[in-house]
Length: 153
Image 1 (cartoon, rainbow, N blue to C red):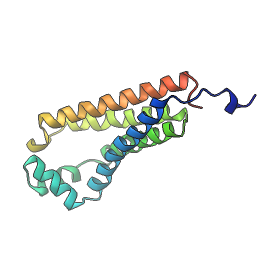
Image 2 (cartoon, one colour; image 1 turned 180 degrees about the horizontal axis):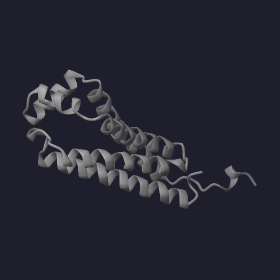
Image 3 (cartoon, one colour; image 1 turned 90 degrees about the horizontal axis):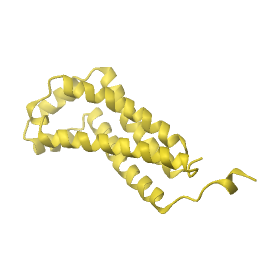
Image 4 (cartoon, one colour; image 1 turned 30 degrees about the horizontal axis):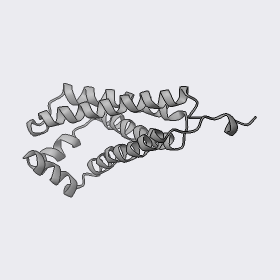
C-alpha cells in the first residue's frame, strides 16, 4: 500500500485555514518588506494613521539592532512558509510555525522592553500584537492536530 493510499482525506477546513493563513501571513511579510526597504509611501501612511511624523517611524525602525530584524524576518517568513506548507499538506507546517513563534518571542521582547515612540505605543498596537500571537499559536496547534490526524504527510 502506498503512502497516497493510506493518507487521510483533507477536511474542507484545512483549505480554508491554509488560504486564510497565506493571506494573513503574507500581510505580515508585506509589512516587513515595506518597512525594511524604508518605503516612504507605505511608512508615511502608517505615520499618518497614528498621528506622527514620517521621520519618527523611519528613526524607530532604523534603530532596530540586526538581531531584532533577524527575529522579525524569521517570524514573518516562517509563518508564511507554514501556511504554504499547510496548503501543500506537509507536516513541516508545524515546524515552520514553531520557528515563527521563536522569531515572534524575540521581536516581542525587544518591542516591549525598549523605548517605543508614543504614537506607536497605543492600545490598538497592543491588541494587534495579541491578535498576531493568538493567530500563530492557533495555527501551530491546528498544524499539529492535522499532522496527528494523518492529514499532513
